[in-house]
Length: 170
Picture 1: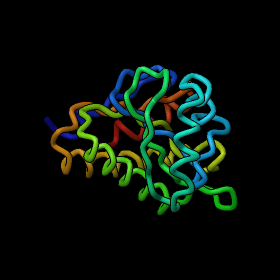
Picture 2 (picture 1 turned 90 degrees about the vertical axis):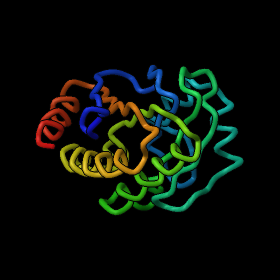
Picture 3 (picture 1 turned 135 degrees about the vertical axis):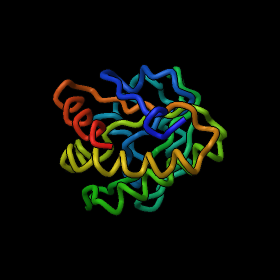
Picture 4 (picture 1 turned 60 degrees about the vertical axis):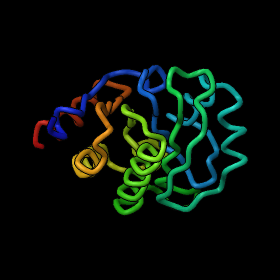
């Protein structure tokens, strides 16, 4: 199966994903504030933030794993593409995606869901995020043969359309 065949774009809420692991667009402090992080905190329950507090802080570009609390997923992979003083950059996004895949490989999961990391509070342009995400997803799919399904879960139609245009180019 080619990398592109493993990737599926989904319009919806990542906290509803039935993938084994979902990726959180995190900050280095692992503080679950707003956006994807806030939704994970609300729907996952207090255990996710409690685990984050035990683990954090982590370095920029790193990824850490917690349980998923009340979510359908088993794990949340917190991809720190930004900190409170620095927005998401191309380098921090590449590193955060790569390290999310490494954590997924360590967990042995066969399915993972990604949001548009760094495009909210992280201030990264949607089209740039899509390009980086799909570049890295193609590379990581080839390296992790256990991974069968990757969902890119996008919250609104505008974001979905921008990511669909980028996906069509790969």
